[in-house]
Length: 144
Image 1 (cartoon, rainbow, N blue to C red):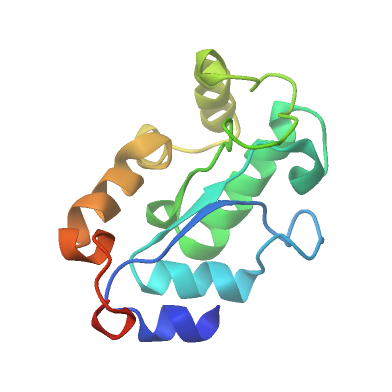
Image 2 (image 1 turned 180 degrees about the vertical axis):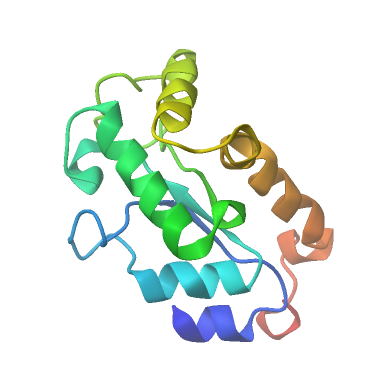
């Protein structure tokens, strides 16, 4: 993980994960990994799966987001819901119609509007615009 972040010439994305600083399970990433992604200009997408976030409510997801922001900065955090995967989402975030609940919770827990906008989508859009299209089109591994 750290080697990939160190070698990448482009922002790195971890698409859906929790953070070990809140829920210490092997599948979640640790603070060193969050910082490594942040140093690339990349994004850590926080998953909405109750077994990753260590709780069954939206507040558990918010705790993961806030920890990732505290470690890597608001520019390095995004949403990695994994709605299309095989997860059981937390209560209050069962589909995209509940995103206003997340927005309100992030603001209530102290994030400013600018940070919330970044987390809700601006960070991912920034990364997608920053990575050259050829990186998505099957270029040789040594050329990425």
